[in-house]
Length: 72
Image 1 (cartoon, rainbow, N blue to C red):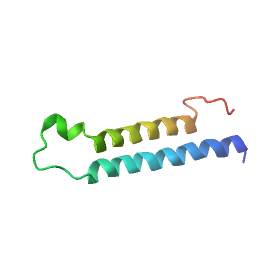
Image 2: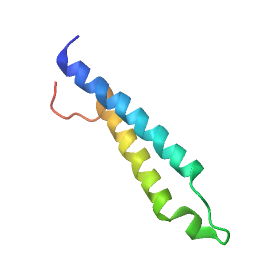
Image 3: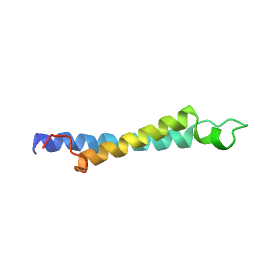
Image 4: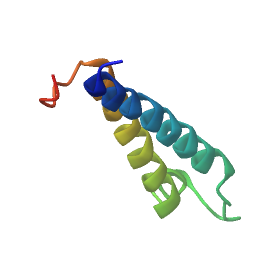
């Protein structure tokens, strides 16, 4: 296996792990008794989960070659 391909495989695996952990954070976070509308979606845990999913998607795109990073 080409070392550059092994490096890109790392991005795919780490991106999948980030997406899974972001989804798990969003589903498992504790909810307050009086959370309404905007508070439900824009608290610290939910924003962090959205960042994890976004970075995970970008990492998978790098690993698949959709976003070039100069390793080829």
